[in-house]
Image (tube, rainbow, N blue to C red; front, side):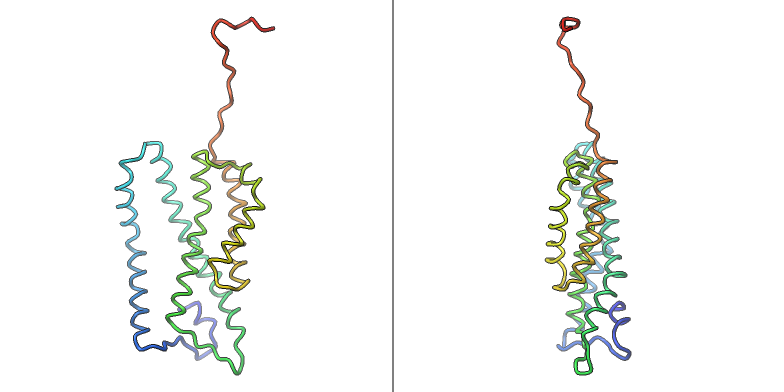
Length: 211
């Protein structure tokens, strides 16, 4: 609640309009907290189930990807909480007037913030995903560079779909994604699989026959 409370007018607070609304909001928050704190154990169980079916080479790529994926998910959520929330809340509350007073519902606020946190966390998966695909040889730096214009278009479409219908939150999401896409181009060039140079193979007994 703190990001919104810091931007509300003095003396304001969140409200609930249905009798059980506050109870179910605490219930949902407890479930989300339980999933978050148990996620390392859940991921370990998932890895223990999947890893016996993987080759050693695949395990070498999957383990770093899981680590960086978790890190970037948290990074996206932290960016949303400390940077995006204050900005969009100030923008939304700027429409308040003497005749229109903000009385945000705690249920709607929780739903709104969870959607944004998940959206930023999931979309910040782009760098580790590109690193994983580059190491596997699926994508390369030149390929990402050639398709930059399509990527920018797709980023803005995704930002429009996963964020609330306002320009500010869309730009706040699309901007970091475009920056990460540019960074992923260099990341793919540096850490991508190096193509082996083709070696001239001469058939046995043909050496010296060509001038």
